[in-house]
Length: 387
Image (cartoon, rainbow, N blue to C red; front, side, top):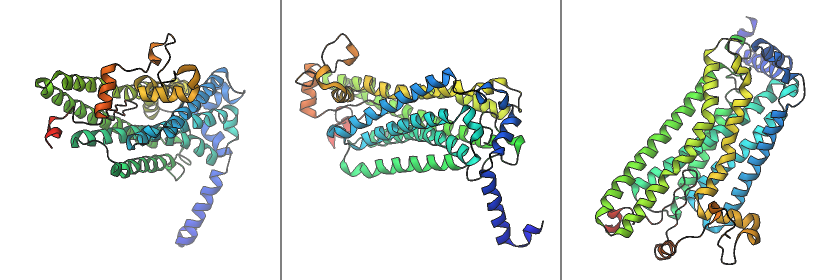
């Protein structure tokens, strides 16, 4: 009551109290005890076998995505605006693997040794990298949609748009991840606490799920529109010579693979989203499955592990660049083709007609993580031929 007499004193005392609470280790004990998580054995013993398995997966995530980033950086062919978005998604996956690793090391018995500030930083890192991955997928979908609607190939002047999308994705991701540490948490209001994340407010959890779901829905809508555009142009090419129609059909097939990354993301993260939604609906200690959240997070981690594999399997250029980086003399011939070693998915050679087409028109189509870079679009859009 007395603190409200002067505004400066009130604000300074409030900030001082917040600072003390963020450094008070007993807050962690209080929240974990209230939600019933202290009954779990993982807060008494060291790292469990499943935690060690998750650590190995995280290490693979970091290594895989680092290889993809280095391949993009070392090959001038990939120094194009569209590959910046691919690199951004790869970077978010790499950082996700690192933050998962830090999260696992700081979990278990180490959780009870943390201050609320360190706890917020631990969990906030995961939320930031998750948001970066989701928003990166949206940025790729937006760029693809703009390019397809405008029916124009890439130009150097469009780098600004790429950097704007990348910058916006990280600004929004960081903003979303730091909301709890800025005050949107349940410290001082135990009844509003999440069971999976005992210092996070249930309302914040619901907010994040809503945002991520809206982004994924927007991505689906954009890709559906892109499919319709390509399909309509494919039908119009039916009356043209077979070569153009064949290229259009091939492009349609390649565009369909764009949905692989999105589909894998939804498959990996949907169980965790459902669990968090259940966390919002359940009363404290009423849903025992909420204490098994680590396994749901493990499934979500697999997404960052699979993305580099998808890049490799769906892009011949990326596959060749990665193999060249890893073991050029072991897997590539002198002319840059992949040796036939009994693994068809590693063979990067193209047919004579494709090579000729590439030489004549400079066609370079890369499907990776929503990344289809057709150049030129003349083979797909009759209108562009006239212009």
